[in-house]
Each structure stands twice: as structure tokens, then as C-alpha cells.
Image (tube, rainbow, N blue to C red; front, side, top):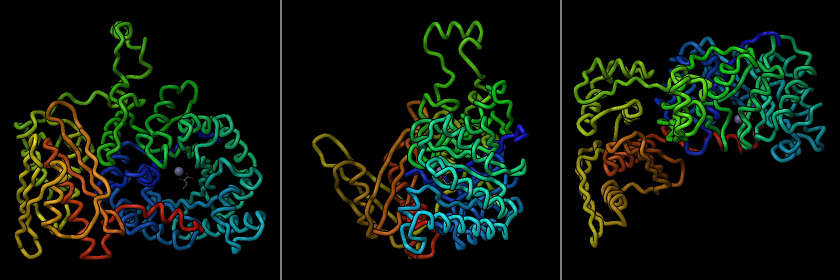
Length: 537
Ligand code: KIV
Ligand code: ZN
């Protein structure tokens, strides 16, 4: 490879979202996609359209609304998947279809055990190669930009991998991804693998080879760096390293490794590193995945010096203990904190700087929510703002139920008790109920259940603090189900009982909407994994 330009392929919205519990709503994905465009990624993998109506809709809207990066959709090597990807991408001119099929013997023997794929491993390999070629050719009918991934390449027989790679290049693939799907490879092995595939493919500079590393052994970033030294010119990565199991290579880490050690790599990206921390906060807020304080680049402690000897050194010369500047990765958030006296202009210009687009039609509501928050919280920081906008954008368009009032009593020696007043907005019926429970939230949820009377189970309830200080925001995430898909509800407030009530109501409203319209696209859950598990081919 002669070029020194690295293509940054962000898969936060696809592989990142496959992390258990990281499901995002469509408005959240669109906000993140806009932010990724501002950050300067080259490719946004927006989702896996065949896996669920919600995935299809997210890809369709991102393709239509987000400009700048190439918008990519994932598809197994199956005609239905490829057609769904092509249709979801139809609204954009810069598109890529990313098709994949497993190539390792272990995958072939288990996922392609059925005799229709062949009896022997040799026959199965022939079938897989043909499916890969057919998929690439079909994808080409939608876009010239076609990426092929040999799933589990890290454990694939080298000769067979080369055969498949040559065949898909011949069929028209322009990017070849070599995933270490299971995070099994050690860095020098992965580098050898990339070097070998590039050489044996006989491809010229027009073909880009890509890394895609998982972090099961904590080597995802190291392996990606080894991959580019071996000739790969695309890195697939996610914000905060979220992804399947232990996650993917973290975008902020690979980008800053390339920037800080430019002397070593001599490779460039188009990322505006000053937006890295902001993007990390947005993804953390929307997914509910906390960034550990010691996380490289974007962690809260990544630039704080605790030991006296370090503090002294940094005061004399920052370079004694710092290899990059906090401000270069956006770790010096503007000191301006918003509060009750900040006007509309202050609020919306701050949101704009944070990469949040609030539609004109939604501004009055967002401002009202901001004022209500400012009454409860002295200073409003960036995370509070992400959370506020997130709440607004996820309000159901036409809620079925509205919680008008709740009251919870707790005290020592007394069983917690809750009363609620809920309005059924479809028929204006007022539902008032009371219940006792094991604790304040339990009694509140029981009272809501009595009032709403929709059969369902509470699958999970999570609460966390998402900003700092005594008046920090508590964010509650709940998941409910009635035996089929799961429905998520999220809310945040300085009052955790209030956040718990609203999160539950949001989940109930999502369930009610789904029941009213079985075709609803509002469900979240295991669509992607089901698609992966169901035979793959
Ligand atoms: O890890 C993997 O193999 C994947 C493929 C779909 C590229 O995510
Ligand atoms: Zn992956």
C-alpha cells in the first residue's frame, strides 16, 4: 500500500450496538451519526437492515439525513440481506454494502453443518466461496463500494482465506476486511495474517485491506496498529471500544496512537481529535455504558495527576508526564456551565457546540425541560444536556399513558406505599391506584401496573449517576417484555424516584404502541443476534 491515509470505519452503531444492553433508539442513532460526521470518520456502519424493522429504519434515515461520510449497511452473504441493505441505503449517494460470511473450519462445521452446504469440509468451502462471490456481485448492483469480510479470518486456514479473498476481489469487492472476530490473535500473528493476505491476493493499491479486531484478550487496539503497520489502510473501530463481548478496537485510542506516534506510523486520519471526548460522552449517555475513569484518551482521569512528584513535574513542564495535551482530545470542556439564568440563545448555542441538532419545532419543549431542570439543579453540564435532549427525542410521538401524579411514602418500620394517577390518553380515562411493595420503586411500579393493567414482566431495572455533584442526575433504564420483544424506557432526573417512574412509563408507552400496531418499529432487543444465529447463510 503506498498511501499513508487510514480510512476510519466507525461501527459504533452496528458492532458497538451489539454489546448486550447497548441498544439505541433511532433518534439516538441519528444524533450519533451526525456527531461521527462532525468528528470526521470516513465510513459510518449504520446498522444491519435485515435484522429488524428498527435497524432498517435507522440505516434508511441515517443514509437520508447524514452527509459527509460513506454510509454503510451490513448484510450476510444472502440475497435478502443484500437487497434490504441496498434498499435502506437508497437515499444516499455515498454508500457501501458490507457483506460477510464465515470462513474458518470451526464456523463451517457448526454453522454450515447442513448437508446442503456440502458433506466434506472441502465441499463446504467451495459453497462458502461461491456464496461470497454471489453476494459481492449482488451488492454491486446497488453500489460500487462493496466491502467483504471473512468472518473469523483470525482462525481461518490461510490458503482458503486467500482463495476467497482473490475470488471476491475478482467479483468486484473494493475493501477486504480481515476480522479477528473472536479476539484470538496476538499482534505479530495478526500482522503476519494481514501481510500474507495482501501479498497472496496480488491486489493493487485500489483494494483497501482492513482491520477489525475484538478485545477478548485486551489486544484490539494493539492488533489494529500491528495491522496498519503490515499494510492495512482501514481500521474498523467503535467509540469507547463498545461492541460484542469485550468490545472492538476503540476509535479514540487508534486515532490518538496514530497521531501521537506519527513518527512511528507516518499515517494520517481525517479525525478532528478535539471532538473525541464530546463524542465519547454522547455515546456513553445514549448507551448507558459508563466510561471507566482510567480509560485512555477519554476517561475522566486520563489527564489528571495525583502523585505529588507528577504534579510537580507537570507544573514545571507538561511533557514530563503527558504525551498529548488534554485540549487536543477535547478534555478541557468549556468552563461555561448553564444555569437558571441562561437564555434560549445560551442553551441552543451550547447544544450546537456539543453537536446536537434540535429541530426548530422541538426547541420550545427542550427549553421548557431545560428550565425545569435548572430549577432543580444549580449547574447544568454537558452530560446533563445530552441526557436532556436524549429524553426529549425519545418521548413517544403519541403516548398512550401519562403519569399525572405520584406519591410515595417510605419510613422505618413502615411498608413503602405508592399512589399514582395516570391518564389513558386514548379515552381520557383517569386511573388511580395504590400499592405497597418491598421498597419505594417496587411499590410505585406495582401501583402503575394496577392502573395500566397491561400484562408484562419487568426484565431489568438499572440506575446510575450520570453527572457530578450533590445534585447529579440519576438515569434509570428499564426493560419490560410480555414474552416477545423487549421494550426499553429511559429517563433521568435529579430525583431518582421521578426518573424511575418516567422510565417505566416510557417503556409501557413503547409496549402499548407496539400492541396497537404490531408492525411498530419501536422494539429493541435481540433482532441482530437472532439474525446472526439463524444459520447465517
Ligand atoms: O467481528 C466480526 O467478524 C464482524 C463481522 C460482521 C465483520 O463484526
Ligand atoms: Zn465484529
